[in-house]
Length: 87
Image (tube, rainbow, N blue to C red; front, side, top):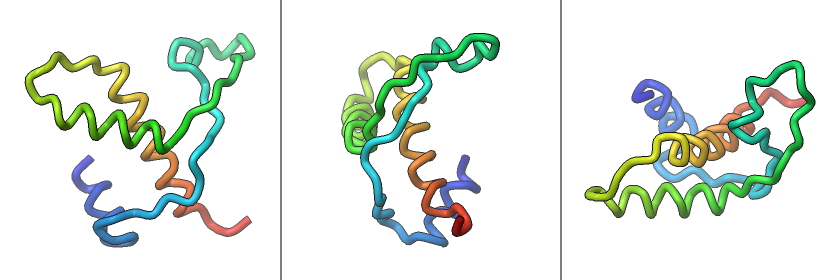
């Protein structure tokens, strides 16, 4: 994870300006049920960033890995889209 974050910072700088807010999301509970067609919901990078910021500001509260990982994944996917080759 550190290596990935270092590469992101090297390529995009210390502050990454994300282009899109909303994205389609496969709910975590349906993501590995590959024989079923999942119902998509909508994610928000703005909401993801706010949630991660709140999480970092609460170091003494319990960690709900599924929740924090979902928001972090939304941010990482948004950064990954910046690195996609042109279509």
